[in-house]
Image 1 (cartoon, helix red, strand yellow):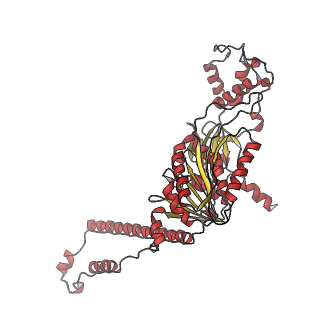
Image 2 (spheres, one colour):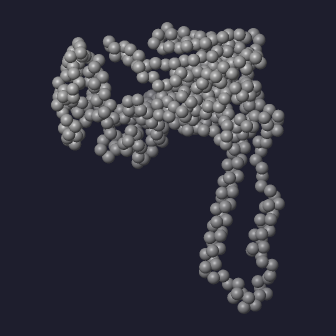
Image 3 (cartoon, one colour):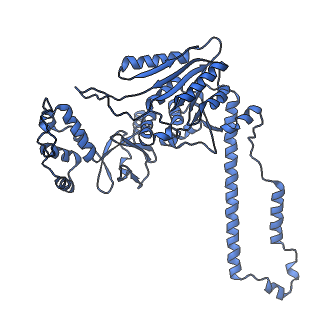
Length: 479
């Protein structure tokens, strides 16, 4: 029974958890904090009432920003929608079919009617609703729900949901990486628990968080980053427990030359002893001015008496010195922690036995790939993603020229959503996302491994067999 209770608590929302708010196709990642206002779709809401509820529940937004759990019965379609016509050709959109005006709808809102009740009133006062086909009625109801239903769904963050959130809101931050391409990358790179994976990405931490999620907190992840520090905004949105971060290490890519040459300095520098001595000498001189106070005359003692203003100034100086010492100590601790992390990451790279490599960056991937391949074990897969085709062609050509890699594949995939409403199955005409490209292969040894090509071929065949609506353009060339 205790185990069942623990499993149930795992699916319940707790204070401090990261969640994803969903309304229609809009997503937003937030953290559950008490009495914190959250702006979602131009509305102020409080998330205190979602604590203790299950993930996936839908809540109604009340006046004042409070949330109330929505009854499942209210999500059902109105009974009038069952009566449908067979043809829409005789329906004229002249703006006169709806009897309710904008003022009438505002009065209904002021009376406290919910979104479903307002939609029911719109259906009852529509002169053409019963003559529409079933598909047109469902489309009408869905459109009105999006406009009048004031609800929000709370979801558990996953790599698919976060990928959809970033791609819908800020696709440039993740290099226009779609969730289907991310799934292919994780599969082709053979990401699994108890493995060692090298990651170089500039996708706001989305790829890194997806790899950590699939590994489940077991194994080692080494993030190679450019610049002053790694970007992990997307990793925080996953809400991983503390032990997940124990498997994550970071290493600046600018230190690879020093690491390979064996001259990487991973020890924090201690403060200069001479500087300490000079500071101590200055403090002793302040405390002991040199003259014996017992031998001074009364006049000299009165002249040395410090006024009240001078005491206040001395106190301020002492407080300022204490703050400086605290900042210096804090800086020293941070520097030691940084050097410790650098040494731990360098120790994991020294073995050059990584099980996988994933590159997804806005930078040109070819120089990074050629450098990081040295730290990959033989017969291990690696995946490179780029929004553009030309950098991947250069990587493909370079690896073919220098050798050492087998099962090279260059893919160009695209995704189109289909309507599943009978009898109107058809693709959605709007597709604003560009095609995404990737390349996967395996570092070569003798005999050549077949793991990478087998995985990619089986996965793509399953896509074609199970979902013929999913289209892929594959350009494959085996050595």
